[in-house]
Image (cartoon, rainbow, N blue to C red; front, side, top):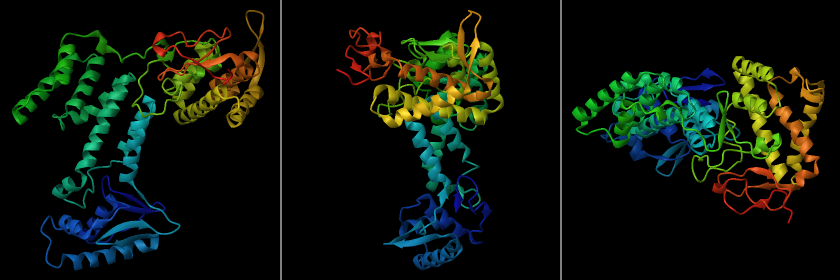
Length: 457
């Protein structure tokens, strides 16, 4: 059974809407329990919420009656309202399960918080915010009870809107920020973080006067309505826009990166495509210190980056890259699936290169390399030499198959035994070290102690 609370309160079983009773108090009771799904809500708290702080003398008996009616509605669908100590909890019966959009919303925010890739952060926030179809429990609770029940959720939603906008600005997606935040600016003039993101987006869109006017409106609201001045972050942004600071015109560039077409790619450090595919930006900040340090997780943000990267490393020529970009724009769902396959391959390849004993990773790499071999054709290049190229039938998987073929060649080459991995906490670059003297990946910021990727002495 699927319950939706972020908007009108509804329940559906296998896509069919389930009536939740005609009495508003009973629907409200079930909604309160679902907001704390899996946890016990005490009878005193239920009574306080349902009767707005003034429960009648027979509140406990009335609640018991309400619970009985709710149980009767839910019983055919395997959902129960269990009595636990001095309260009640919604539970799924044996062999059944139920979903609550509030729980899904919170889970997606947690995934966004630990995602190291900006694109993945935005995707998680997109999915989380799309769950909101209106005010919490619209039509079931009044404004006062909504504030008591959903104040934290409303704040989390606004934080997610602001975080998504800031992440989009780092990716150069100011047009999306304009589309998302412009309708909210008038409703939320006191949200300085939201206003700052929208001002930056306006400035990057060439609308400097509108950005300054937004600041003026916000400042007027804060001074006259709350008696405070804008904070230092918003004031500094206003001064930079007023001065026409050119650094605001573009998102911050990652360290040790190159711009190819309209994509940021990591520096070339090894000269081998299979190694470069595993590498990442040195010094690129992770979302938080506890986020997993997966090499390569930061640069491969979208399918266009993958296609441009393949061309940059001569795994595909320019006409092929153009075709891939056009196909990806026309078939975004298929492009996203191809990107996911490429990321999974990258994880297996890094494990395979850093641990020769990891047979599972080797088999995963070999399976893709064998697919690449079946799709490869031998062509004669303008230099008079033969070259292996992937046939157009490879479709959106062409960059993945091309790097898999390169990886197979490396794994069969004795040079594979000279690989090293930089020990820098924000690096992890792989590079060949045939002399045995090099202990870092040419960047002093990455440290001076190395380790062998192969585990050899």
